Image (cartoon, rainbow, N blue to C red; front, side, top):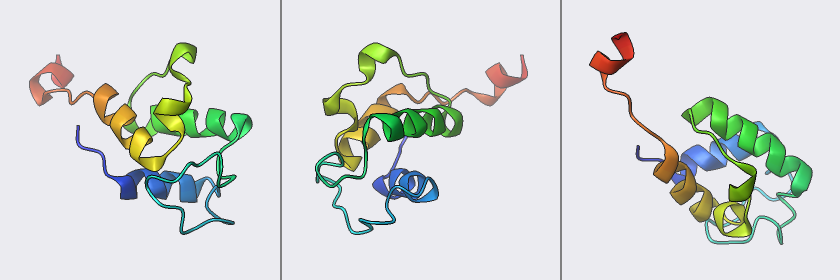
Length: 90
């Protein structure tokens, strides 16, 4: 599934995480910009799981997967599965 940085940015915005840093770049560290901390990461993961139908294991909660918007896009895209309509009806 193709996921865009705008889709991830909108989730961060909906959660209120971009209120103090609306112009954070796609390659900028969300931790260094104080957008994500450990508590917010849990909220974001729950939102991504619900919105994109993915599951995130605790072993995947690594900086390389969630430190930037670009990394989150790659992570979600790699785990998102498009279910064919015929399989969804079965």
